[in-house]
Length: 299
Image (cartoon, rainbow, N blue to C red; front, top):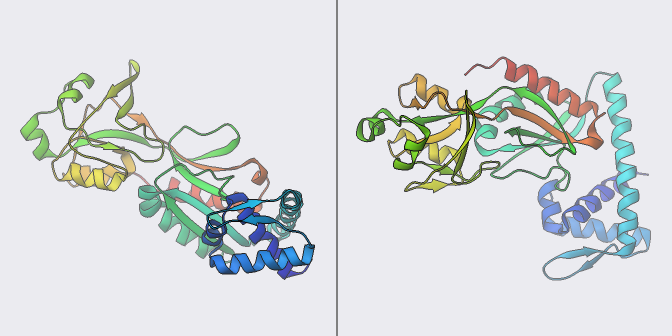
């Protein structure tokens, strides 16, 4: 199979998986028109129609389903071959798609990606951040750097670093409103709820020496972005539940104070990847590098 056909199969697999030429184009860093053109060339070469096209979406045909199954197997075999060869040479190479959340991705994972690319110049790393849990299988990611311990059993997870979330507020807020003395006191406070990835919105599940407890919180402001909630907390608006890696610098600077220190929420950092990549040398190198890099960080 020549390089052109190999590339076209990858375009087709992405479009079939996403049921969209536009989504495949975004994933692959191409234009939708180019994706449509390459799939047209592949259809002409195979002599079958792979998709039924409408103005809003594309639907894979029966012939397309058969080609999709074979294409996945062919590309996986090729990837494994290149993986094995590059691993023997100890020079991992090829494209790796990695995802993470907004806050951790921008502040912690992104600098690590730059160092990873420097350490392994043969890798082409595409790093994307989201405000939701990514379906790495359906969306074609090789690795998700995930904060939080709720991980589906069909995925492989390796812990990169220990982390937990704590309750914080600014000294100004506590001077005005007083510090909560018990978890029940949070009902009388302005709590800054976050709808972000694995956070249950408006419900804080916390752990103490007495076990797990759940408290329903409310406040004047809520957001889907943790950095916004953290800014509001620093501005004296309310109490926030946020990861230690995120708030520790602000605690050290005196901008925030931990409240109810007996209560925390486990939120370790994991490398999560599909079962099919269990033997991937590229993924192994990325995970081991991130483990070593994050192990050197302290909060």
